[in-house]
Amino acid sequence: MIKISRRDVLKTAGTIGGALLAPGLPLWSLAEAAPREQAPASFVNLSSALLGIEAGVLNPAIRPDDISMADVFYGLTVLAGPRSIANLLAAYDVMEQQHRSPDQIAQALLASGNGPNTSLNGAFSRLITLMWLYGTWYGQTEISNIPTSAAGIATDYQKDFVISSRAYKSGWIWRIAQTHPMGFSQFNFGSWASAPPSLADYGISLT
Image (cartoon, rainbow, N blue to C red; front, top):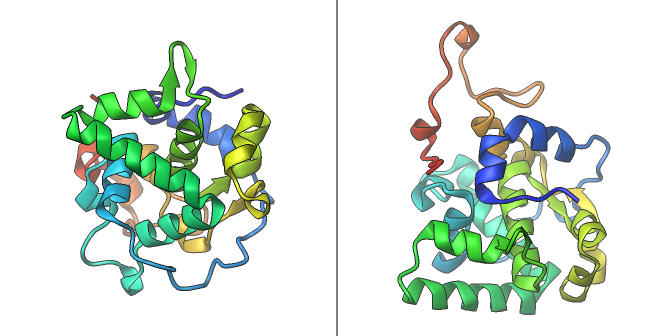
């Protein structure tokens, strides 16, 4: 089992990324569909806490083709487990009202003692984190690691698949690792000759 915490993912992007960027995964059947609904602020803020990336950077006001990845990812979680995502957002709201820090919230949702949080809140927290990082839904991987997670994931979503080409290309793992996917780059030609942007430039916190 790969143990994943927010800090572990961000600080060991190359190692964990190599394990999870598996080739040959199918593309989501609804990949090109418009987002089903607008993601609530609590979903964006939860994502921000899990990743340690500013909410405004995750879900900017100006987006390519006016498509919000937050909307896409939220819509997917609603299809994959409507009750599970509702319960997770409710738990997040409670912790936010208790004035817990984003790091404390992430720790509570992702970890339990020295291991992963095996509750459904933990399962969907991991799935959301990995969606943002890799543009991929890892339902099968989650269930393989923690079989009880299957109880909260709809049958059609108990598999691994790439969410869309846009989701894959915009995965945060590329920025964290200070690189880009094969055949696509947001940097100008010759940028390899300059030092890469710092993680802080992307709104990423490692503290």
